[in-house]
Length: 502
Image (cartoon, rainbow, N blue to C red; front, side):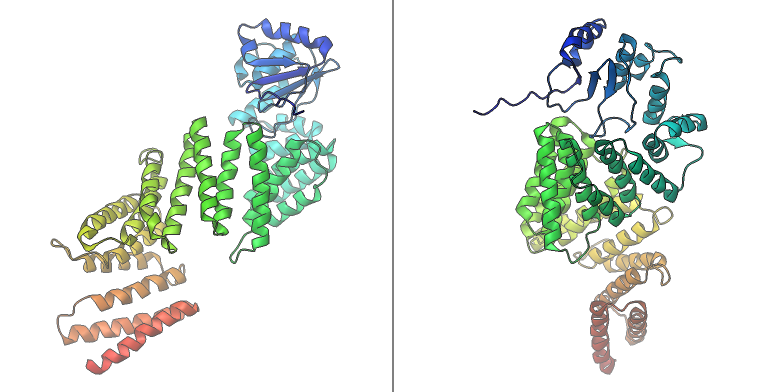
């Protein structure tokens, strides 16, 4: 016989022994409507909410594997109405109310104060840090990693501190909880192989399903961060399997936001595997979850990922995806607006401009698409100024110039002259010293432009010939890339043929 699924709880759950359940319920009921947010039970429930345990007249906090509060470890505290209510309100996020039940002399006061300062970004005093360090190396790591301190450890010192916390962990569950945050530090500092080694050293030690899932997520993240072209199919399969396990785990607990974030990564892995249908399914589900949970920022990121995927596919032999990509990018502009997310707004318009310049259309429709293209490039360049974002400015200028070379002839101005000006602007940033490869790309496109522009007389032709010859010579000093050198040599051959005519 199949067992009835255990109920999923979306609130704070207090799990206690049968003989104290009624007492705990009475304490919770003493505060008006608090019992609407707190479930008291003597049965083990599957929950996606926060947990408190009461055992042997002690209150114990459950480890927060889902990043809903600071990863601060509280020691067991004596069970009393005041301690329980203070801790309940802390867990529910009402910190001000929590401190109404305890005073500075109570054992819970200092830990609660430090955890609250950590959560809200208030400064952690040296006295607080020293006090924490004496009692818990894990908490010292957490304060150094996530807190605001005057005397911060260096990365090397913090790594050593985390390693000490792992060695001193009271059990495997706590060790993996510490390792979760240690590997976050390593991944953020691009020490991805180190993170992988830490995770693999703990495999087989996980006790709870939450701990096992944490290891799966961290290992998938570490492996994904180390990916490079060409991708190894076996590694992609491992990452995909890990993500699918963790997505299923979060879905089983109705943790849609957590699942959605992993679905975005799973979509990228599927794309690397050329599984376009699977990639689209992953990202579509992520978008649905974020909509259901009304998480606007994550929804925008997922929509942007979908748009980028569609654009990638359209450029790789599937032109039918150009218009869906346009629609997807336009949808993201409803989230990432100019006044709230100016940089993302500019990036989206840059992508739209590229699509408008590349989409295959009949000649009658070309003017309207080029107008869209020019408008989007101008939006991008309005944010990416030469002074504040020189690299992005040069990239957008280069791409706009390249697009102008394929625009239909304009009545009011010369598109090719405009393209020449933009290429020159890009080259002021793409210098020999800073960006030789990017400079070579711009110079190659300048050569293409040279064949399109008109010469007034033979002296102009001779001048352009010498300029193009000079450009080819410079390209060969900038790069060793065989493809770019081949393109430069093709231009040289054409010039040599032209030389006899000149």
